[in-house]
Image (tube, rainbow, N blue to C red; front, top):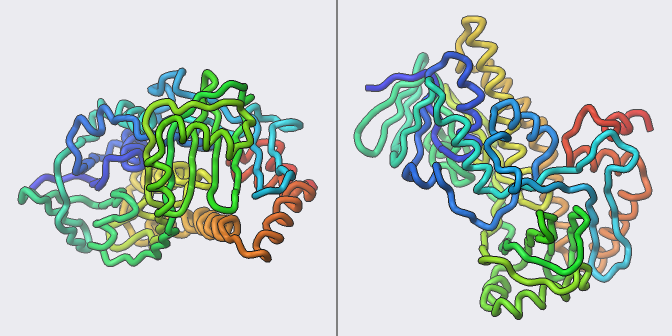
Length: 402
């Protein structure tokens, strides 16, 4: 039977970032991943672009992940526009009169995954085991036993489930979760266009679907179309030319003619929120803890923040000679991460519900929400801070000084 201090189930960005955070602690870390090594070492493009906050950038720099991402894969958001239906009113966010230069940073999902792997792969106290499925977890007072499909067992002081929003480890440990099926599909791709986007991200809440246009480099934008599942099949069946013209038209030709670049990908939208983030000698993180709707772009950011929170608690406990998986420590992690994630999860779901509701009252209300967001400075500052997570910026200070 192999022994380690921390066994992490899931070799995605959250799990690998957590392993990286603990790599300087002297603890022995094992990462268990179902996929083969090539899948996490050289991930393929999947159409998804991740909008990173300032806090995520800070953590990724500290972990050496940022340096692993090619410079040409990084683009910047300097402005953001929110549009509603057929209204000519636009809610605008920018960095004017603030101490920050960007609202956020756009990086392909596959680049983040590869960066997380490359940053941790050579850490001497981190072992990555691939093509292994966890079949059971048995927790005792001092250790947990993780059983694998091939019959091997691993004894760990702490087990961490970072195995997606459909987490098997979460179920093994008896932790329930609220699952919210939005009944919609996200269609993602890249498109080139005639006009400059000026590093502006646009979120267009049309009455039948949502269209997000996110700035990348070299006159290219990431396109995210959210629509009802039956309609997604029709859009995917369009020819490249039909799709390009339809998207440009729905964006009001703001970027001129648009042309599909590469493949279209589709993903069903499902929200998840675990009712607890811990059990006996066990913790949840990443999408296994909170799986967000992508409209507010907090999915990976929240997972990275949770991994950092738990890692810092463990490092401190280990330095003081305390139990790294005590109920007190795990309960504190649960409380801290819940305080951050619960408002974001409920707020995001509320935004999705409001801006996908086509009833007359909802249309009136959402127009009022957009105008209020623009006309009330403290509210606008608060929303901007939620987008950036830049706590030390003048934006954040403005919330309390207004």
